[in-house]
Amino acid sequence: MRYQRPKGTADILPGEAQKWNYVEETARMLFDDYRYQEIRTPMFENFDVFSRTSGDTSDVVTKEMYDFNDKGDRHMSLRPEGTAGVVRAFVENKLYGPEHPRPVKVFYMGSMFRYERPQSGRQREFHQIGVEAFGSNEPELDVEVIAMGMDLLKHFGLSGLRLEINSLGDKASRDAYRQALIDYLDPHFDELSDDSKVRLHKNPLRVLDSKDKRDQEIVKGAPSILDYLNEDSQKHFDKVKHLLESLNIPYVVDPDMVRGLDYYNHTIFEIMVDSKALGEGYTTICAGGRYNGLVEQLGGPEMPGIGFGLGMERLMLLMEAQGVKFPVLDQLDAYVVGIGEQTSVLTLQIVQALRADGFAADRDYLDRKPKAQFKTANKLNAQYTITIGESELEKKTANVKQMRTGTEVSVPLAEIFKDFDEIITKYFTDDEEID
Image 1 (cartoon, helix red, strand yellow):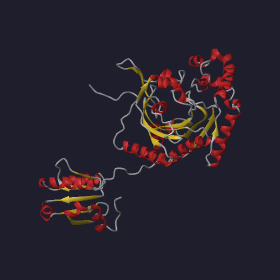
Image 2 (spheres, rainbow, N blue to C red):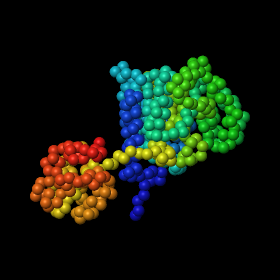
Image 3 (cartoon, rainbow, N blue to C red):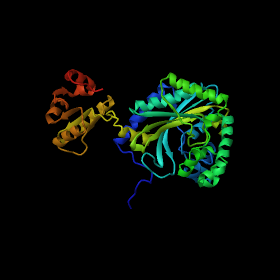
């Protein structure tokens, strides 16, 4: 029987995985600059954690969740997104307590799962980098999160970014808009898609996000949420726009943006890019917003929150399409060549000594001839070769060759074991040193 990976998943192979590691480590360093700390939550949660927070009319809950009953007949779900699990952990572990300075800032990385049609940059198992900040309702925090998202994508070398923002207002604003939207859509009820008919009276904002072409034509004339913001909501949104301008971050207001999950309110945003690698026109690469009320939904105190999520698969496709150059992360500092069976123990001792000294080192494990070993060293782009033969064994020396220049010297074995970096400095002073 031939085994294959499940549909909608991918193997991230050596070489490609190094690029992923670079992206993840770059994100970690940037998040540290903004004082965000890592949090790791389970890959599966109680089904209600997601159904309660995402909304029972969202596509995530109604169509895409991988849910199952475990052997204890508990209804569980693989996580379809990162925020709900982080909020659950925030509440359960009482990170809202006085011993945790506010805002509480965290980030996460990991696999998410949604049952949908696999396509470029969108898989059934996908990987997400996200941030969440709890405990502040100030527009300044909204802008910090947006600025960090833009900053992160620029650190990855991406260009042509477009920031779109909107406000969904507070509960009072949303309730007023909800009724106005129902009043507008009711006369078109028979023309709506089946999904939108179900959503109309439960959560009419979901109709605005419909992918059905008939629905999209109908909602073109729908009222705008921005016309229903009350004074406090308008003030919050105006401050966000002013702060973005003060940081010289260009933005576009998109009054039709509602986001795909029900827990958002006030500021929402999407960072988009125009790339054929992700489809025609502008495509979202990073998105998020404020979700005041979500902590209370999961049993915590009143605690505002805001965050964003970034899809790794889409990011990697975009970086490749824009020709982003990844740094060389697999440099081989030294390859130890052994000539003759009697050198085997010594070459193994040398590579282990070099590794203990912080160098990337390797040797032959296939009992190959010297010519084949040198060919391998060259193929692996080794910076140096260290050659041990019968005469070197007798003299207790080794030949060290810098591959880039061809410069070769004979040095005592004791010096290699003591400090290989000193050898490089001493004998190859005019050449580039190993970092």
